[in-house]
Length: 297
Image 1 (cartoon, rainbow, N blue to C red):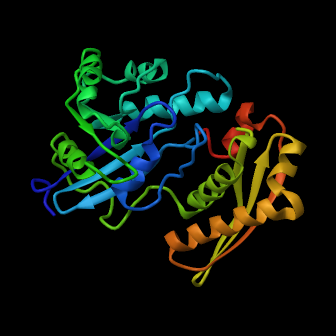
Image 2: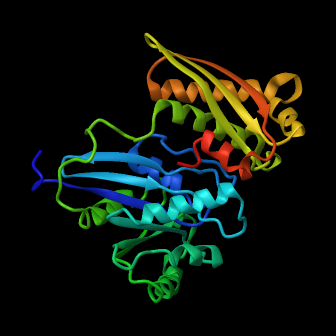
Image 3: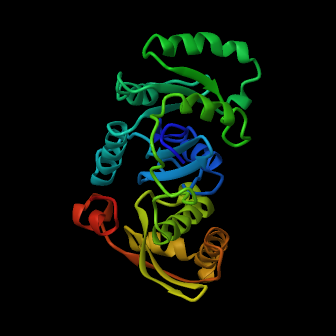
């Protein structure tokens, strides 16, 4: 594939928490690369999703929701991930919830580099019955930043996502493929295994589960077609440990079962998954522990 025939580049997906950035990434790539839940700040790492078409390779950089309320070490690391992503991409998708714009959105808007083409992505547009009502809303945002394009989409339903890709392609440089055509993410299976477990925790426990929970893969071994994975769920307090384990161990068993099914679907093979819980007090504000857990480079 010659450089003259294809366009390849990086696209940062940015926005405040819970506007659907990870759902959009997964829809565009066609696989669950980034975990999703209703709990705010589910995404903590920069995750790349790769889509290769005959005419282009899109490398999407999913970023954590930009934090304006909390200033702990974990949140500082997440915000650095956002600003670093914006400094090294060819295009930006600034994702907002259609018809909604508040101080958290504005904090992200102020980060957009003026020299990089930014597309205003109005997600959840399927929830807006009167599309004409979005015109003054779009005009207001256009007055604060010069957007290269404005597109209403629905990441959950897949509406207008092809149009979004076609709009983004025009701004990608003509170049050789950045990744092999069959790759869909830059992240390892080990990383994805930890993320799938964390997603199930958030989905099953919701707001009951404190924010200070993470997953550490202590063993990941490939034995023929079997992946043998040992994982520790890291919590901040003893009562959080009891919450994750659940009555008779039921919650932990369900987390492990549902996460294992997701892993087998993505990895294309059998998974033996063993999960337990351990307490590391103050881990979310301890830079040494954050580095061990992969949040700091």
